[in-house]
Length: 147
Image 1 (cartoon, rainbow, N blue to C red):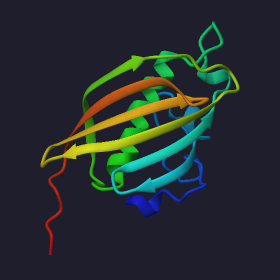
Image 2 (cartoon, rainbow, N blue to C red):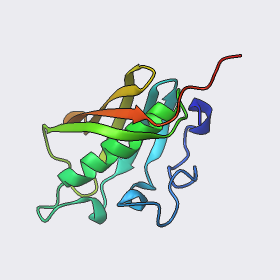
Image 3 (cartoon, one colour):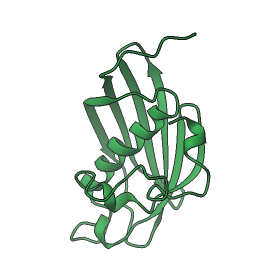
């Protein structure tokens, strides 16, 4: 998948990137919509729905971490469509988003090497920062040889 595999306006579910039964929680993010995609950048928007909130009615921390895992992996796929696994993830919660709020999720590939990719993600709601995260992934396949 390259940046062109993430057309603006498409939902993650429409892209076929998430299939029914494809893993823990992934289906809950299928309505996230691509706002922008470029090499090493993926920007999405998504409404906070009942399946995304904690008992207080705000975005659940585990949902933020799931977005970090899945959406930064998609950002990596815009430049390096290779199988990878998580090495490290960390997140900082800086605010709250409520049920019905629209989230803007911006993912960046900060650096890639032969075996590792370093990514970052921010989530904003109403122009306010809600979450920042970092995700390191290890490639399981060698890079494809350039011809």
